[in-house]
Length: 432
Image (cartoon, rainbow, N blue to C red):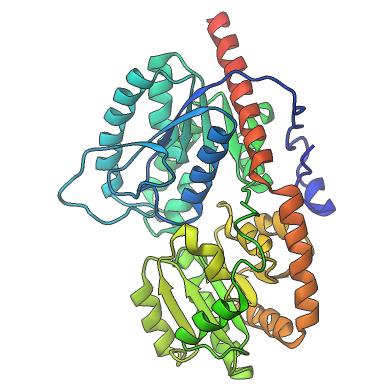
């Protein structure tokens, strides 16, 4: 059985929400055709997309057929069967987070999903994000199929985090009511954390039996210590202008206010004041130019390197350049899959103390008060000053990533969600 990734205190705050037991290796399941609906510019090398990709990969590895419908302006990967919307001439940029342009793209996605479903004849519809669950709900209803919703954070909270919606604004209540409606469309919901499951049960009143926890997982074979040879590591650091013996703090993820990028730079300023030899390697997008300018204004240009977008396949080699990892995210409802990549790489980690951080890191990382840049700086400096303690922390995190967050286990949990949705859908049909 997969162990819930919670410390004792966190487990006590999650009554009646638990990861389901895994079936035996000999358990037989029907081979399913899965239609995934992803209202985003898949694939774009960040957390939400990584979860979609790895779920599709493990389903295929377990013998199931997966077809994914998504926006026109993403990148094809991994031989996955991807069906895209028609292009629109006025929008070429990748869609990240909330955007008014998504309304038009979602309208096109409805047509693509329906056409694909009629040809593919799915056994289950798997909607990612709230728009995917809404579009998937229409497709599932018309096709007479069960719907599973992959919940990766509150729709209303995300729009507030992205500055697309004001908490006190008139539209806030309308969006929250829409979110309430979408949450009730699927026969089963999978969440990336126990914190998200609690949110659905306690804040939105979802029945506990409908919510299953499928934690973000990690490919621990790809993300591992030693993935980059010492000579290659030194050469890459040298190419980036980083001294071979400099302590390097790495961040890999989206660059945005709700991701805590501003706070990371504030912490970096404090760290560099105390230890001028420390370098920060900030990897991700969008807004690289904006944050590079902010770093320059803080006098950090010689201490912070921005790489821009890092392809997912190159992420292990890039993380291997670091000695310490940071997770300054401040959003309280989204997942944080980057933590698992850090853990699998054996990187000692400093993170803001959010519920999802505790689920993954437990007490084996430095968790500081959320939003406190000074505390984050102190945590980084403590690890820099005590490399033996930092190395031991990294080893513990790596061991837990391998033992508890493997994607094969994640795939079995996802199949349980499909089973539960199929049973609920069949029961509803009988009652009707």
